[in-house]
Image (cartoon, rainbow, N blue to C red):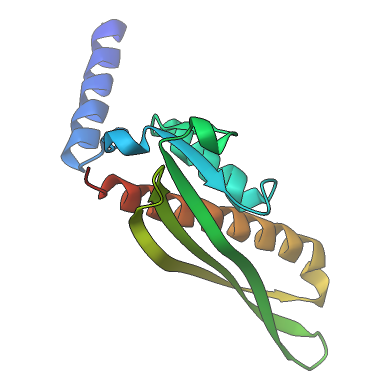
Length: 165
């Protein structure tokens, strides 16, 4: 009886997940010219670059360290992280923070042909903090930066998937 109940619960959960449109993300299909990619950047250890590299690998793109072994080059022209704060006075100083991540990139093949012209992607996040929340505010800022890295990396992967051979 207990096993039947477990099966019913499992069936209901599966049915509810499929009804809401949940599906595991499938790797995108990329043009053959994008199967082996070199990331051309002056900051290879930047957290965004590392996140982008993981996103490409998760989508079955082989990321190489030698541009001669690549079939395409993802050129990260600019990575800007900007944090703005406006403070309100009073007994406790509270701050309204806006964090921006702005990435400019292009994509070329081995012959130098432009597959994606220079393009700029931007993501922003807001949060508030006060003098008593300094540590949690720093943690929040780091989490938001990581989310923005992942979002922009996925936006680049989505644009790569649209490149036709």
